[in-house]
Length: 79
Image (cartoon, rainbow, N blue to C red; front, top):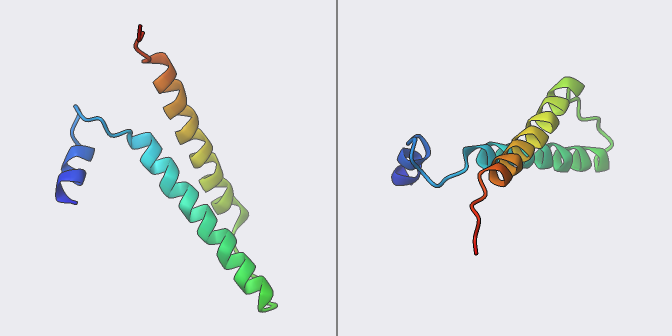
């Protein structure tokens, strides 16, 4: 785990930081959804500010979009 974090902050690594942040944001959105379903079955309302959820949504889309574009631009010709 220590090596992973040292590699994560190294400039010359093979880890895609944008994909990690996007995946973490996606997991938080899933946790929100599961918590909303659970509280809904208990007939209670889960109050989540809309701008917080929208922020995670935009962060997820942006991270995965930028990571995809980055991978496409830096694609090496394999022959």
